Length: 295
Image 1: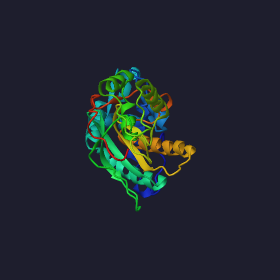
Image 2: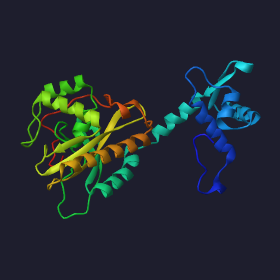
Image 3: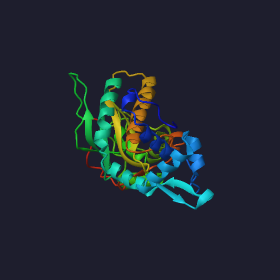
C-alpha cells in the first residue's frame, strides 16, 4: 500500500477498494500534464500489472481516471469525476460542524473559553463557542460584531487581508481606543498585523477589555481563503509571558486542524513561509458598531 495502513479490524478491510484508493493516490502524485503509465502505477502501488490495468479501466468508466495516448505511450491521470465529488463533499461540510469538536478540545486543554467567528463587513462575528464552568463568566456575546483592530478574532481575520487592504481599513475607520493598551497608531498597528501573519496567531492583551486576554488564529478553506477564525478568551490574572506563546501555538494548531477538515492541504506554502491569504468578504468595518465587552 502507498499511503494507508491496515485498519485495526482487518475483517472490514476490502482489498480491492484499498487498491483502487492506492491507485488514485498514486495518480495524484504525477507531474501535471504527464500522467503515469500502467507500469509506473503498478510499481508504485505494488500491484500486478494486469490487475492495475483492470482497475484503471474500471475507474475510468466512472470518470475517476482519465487517459491520453495509445499503446506504450498511454498515460493515466486523475479524472474530473473526482472534482465533481470534491465539490459535492465541500458543499456538505459545515464550518461549525468541523470546528466545534476542536473548540471543545481546545477549551479542555487550555482551560479558557473558545470561540469561532466568521468575517462580515470587516468584523468578526461569533457563530459558536464553548464556555468553561466557572463562577466568573465572560460576556462572549454570540452573534455580535467585534472591532477588528483590538480583539484576537478580529486581528486574526484582518491579518489575512493584503497589506494594502488592511491599510485602507485603518485609514477609513481609524483605530478607536478601547483600553489604555489598544494600539491606536496606524503604522504600529500595520506592522503588528505582519507579525501576526508571520507567527500565525493574534494576541489581544487587554486591548479590548481590561483584565481579559484573547488569542486568535485564522481558519482557511481548500482554496486558502480565510473563512473564519477561532480564539480562546480568559482572565489575565498574572499570566506569565511565556504562557502566551504556548497558548498561541495551541490555538494556531487547532485552527490548522479545522482548515484541514475544510480541505486545506497540510504543508501548504503558508505553513512554512506565511503569506497573505484572501478573505471571503470585502474589507469594510464600521468604527461605531459591534464592539464587545470580551475580546
